[in-house]
Image (cartoon, rainbow, N blue to C red):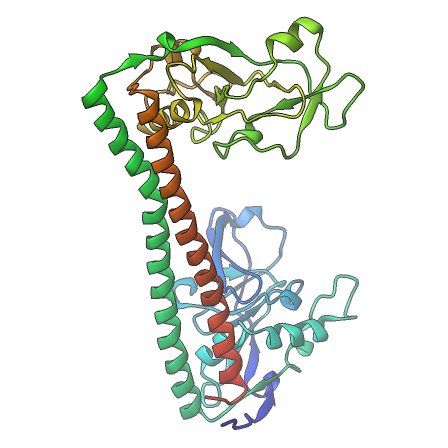
Length: 400
């Protein structure tokens, strides 16, 4: 059943408030900001009073309504929390004090999270200046639904209870996602250890037929005459080859032959400022034309009579996650590195090819299952994100 909420202008239930202070050099001022789309107020970096260009700053107190003049049209309105009491904003952040005999601040707190409120802020911002700033007097013309205080408190209590349940569901979903993402690597580690016990370890250099750094030739986004596509870190970062955002380089005949990628080659990221990327690897699939690879990667070519490329890549993935591939001493350029020497000396178990293929198939099956769980969790996340706005819409339309 819908019960129409009485509508009132904000000017009837909140009043402008100013607590000015002249900034004093040598005194530290906590600063307040307001996020977009009803995400609330937050504390910005503190500043010295001598650093501001403003002649006055204005102190915020708990329960104040604070507005970002420029971005109010994008939902930059909030109710100040107790944690932010005593922070300061410039005149670009006008503040208002609720009349507590008519309005519970929490009612307005939840209202600022609704698209209908943002739309009104947008309408009242238009035409006030070239930047569509909202003037305080125009902000006070916005109309809001306002039932009696007892009804406000009842609805707020209900909203907060549901919001807490939604937050709990989000946390459970996050934990489930983390557990799902950890499963393949945990399985891979267990497989590695079991194979070591059964077959021992072999140095990679005994399995390689070639290992080489890539081309340092400058790449271009547009393909030039005689240009060859060059695989770079973004094409390997997901630990499978992607052919998006290709770049091209013109190589001489010798380089073209030396750097040509073959099906079954493995590319390893050898240097990068991100530790998470260094050591990532991917197996080269069958390509429709000759490809080269960039200098910040290493190409490994294995004896496929002894080791399957997909299996070798899984073992490299385990070594990366275990932290035994990366040279942790960063270079003067701020990069992490995997050296050819480190790769050659790395050790992995090498069961018979039939066992290697079985292991890869088993790991692939688990990844498919985990991907299905992750897709389901993502769908649940979308549903959770839509739930609170729907609840707020019903609450302020009088359907609760």
